[in-house]
Image (spheres, helix red, strand yellow):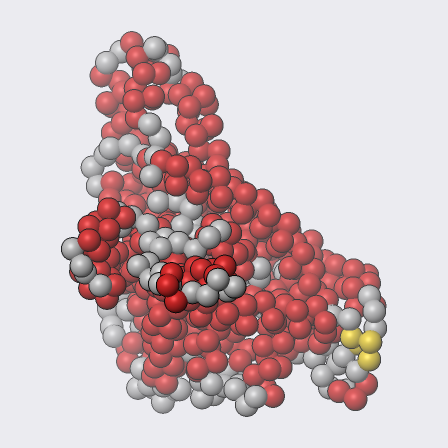
Length: 316
Length: 284
């Protein structure tokens, strides 16, 4: 900061560039701490996407490496025309939308309950977070074996308790495979939504609510006209971040149904296409489609994050 | 619903207590599956597999003993040690890269620092599964399959955006005036970092580390594809329980709980900062 070129040593001809050099050096000194992280990020996360994009244009089965050749958009048309692959696109959408919306709604109800004073509020909050802090595959195993097992799982046990010997004993996973996967994910992701929305509720201006109440607004009116508009961006954030995480879900599908019974989503299909079927080109084309979908989601997500962020910066 | 409630005084309080009760019920309902799994893990296999369930069955540590290798099954220790290595090393590496970056984005910001910040964020939004194949092929050709350090590098990249975002927000809480005052007093950069910045940012750095640790510990897909016998992590060890093996409910419960324990501990410790990490710093 204090380094400046001594003017006496500077020759008239190179005066301008010499004056610029310390500036430039200072700029690079400011940038230097940033570079390792930036280079690392680009090398490890961006280059593989470029490679995936390149591979997606090749007909390449790892079992026949000599038969690799350029295929144009053939992989893409195969992904979009093979029924199973096309179905996995639909399954991904259905799984994501269901899990995100249901856990958002449950999370909102729980956040509203927790946004009021009552005895043991901190304890209840801790209880509610617990499902989210189970390792995802451990949670999937819990649902698959301990809860859903048709012979001795907890669900059928409770039905037996309530209904006696004639109680129905459904085989949950075979009867409703996608709902079975969704329920386990909703259980894990509701706490996430609750935490985001609770943070939103608590950033509300209490004086505004107080003023509205003084003017005789009912709870419902306060909720509709004050709370909901304020929560809007937090709800959007929950939807978008939830979608980004759930679209990528692999653990629950892999564990609970192993992608069977019509529950294979795109990440599972990509895994299976290259790891078991060794169809590298096809798997890459499916990967590119996931990326395109994510970019669309991310564009909206970034907009929401950036508006919250700017508000934060201007408040500081 | 409450046009009446405003006028009658005692009712809101009664309703408040009622809603508190509902909140308690919801909390218990959510934790019930987890509590049931914990109880099952302390039952014998025969008691765990009754229908209707036996609540009051005698407790035993058998399935924990069996999980840790007493029954002659595969020992979980190599997998646990791999997970500890991968999670701790990647968390350290993440901090090492994220701290200077966050410094250059907050305390002495580069030009267009918000753009850089959002670039980091955007990389988190692309699904890692789409880069899995090239990474697998690269690791295979470079002889890096079944190597825990391959996971360290990938987990670092996975967590770096979150860490940079969180750390940026913690460092920007350090008032510039204090730093300038220290500079005027003649303090040099290392002193300023150690004496002024660190004390304010340390709780945030701790929370960030815990969140990076949790995400690394949980990761399954990359570990499943890139590791085999040598470098398998704890979640990969759990994939051995996907297909039913007769009476094994107590054992699968014990295994799932033991492997989740570090995450439960880290998560409760970082409870207050958890939202900030998960929402990529957007919510405080």
